[in-house]
Image (cartoon, rainbow, N blue to C red; front, top):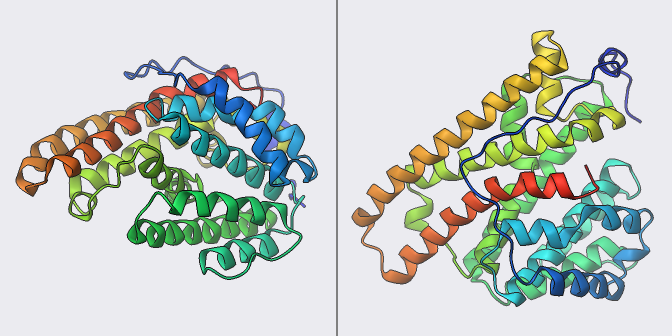
Length: 323
């Protein structure tokens, strides 16, 4: 049960407009969206995801096909289909864990069983759906990718548990601590791993280890997370959840939500500027890494995908009924 921590009663009287973020990247739409909208409906029925309490309501307003189409507009039809299914799973996992429809500890233990190639525990539709997706995805990726994905998922689970305990205890962390946590539990590291599969662009380790690439990942992740928080503010205010940058800024600074919103917008612009600078540095660094053509293409495809995430997310959040 979420503890009443006071500020929401004051915030409830405030009217905060969602601003135009004026981002430098256009929204692009994958042409296979309509196909994937039908495919994901078939898939959630096949794996039993639709039978989870509230899963139908979640998926009816969350438009996983739209989320995938704007985040990976260059994916093939099969790639977009896989990404759409992953979005459906992530959205249901997020909503059912937040509202306690599922036993989070039991489900996450099941996910870890799947990662360890152990039998899927019976009776958990979320775990069964995850196992189905994991098998499909691993068939496209390397052993190194599989290991990295497992590490990313375990980090996500740990961060979500930490956030849940803090929320239940009525704790407010600093904005700095929130941003660090959000880089993990915002789920973008997991989705970036999936991007490499659906776009056929596993980034070589030598690129992944470079300072410029790491900054591209960090700044684009921040930009996407901050954009998400801006658009999801009304939803999270209604739920009295403190996991939102705007609320964190208002609480820490003792300011109005409107002032905190303006500050959050500046956070977005700073993150985008940081991404553009890191991208330029990466272009300068790549020739020194002596990559072959396929490796260079993988790096450039992933950087372009980060642009698509930043440019596409506002369109998704404006159009999806989820927000």
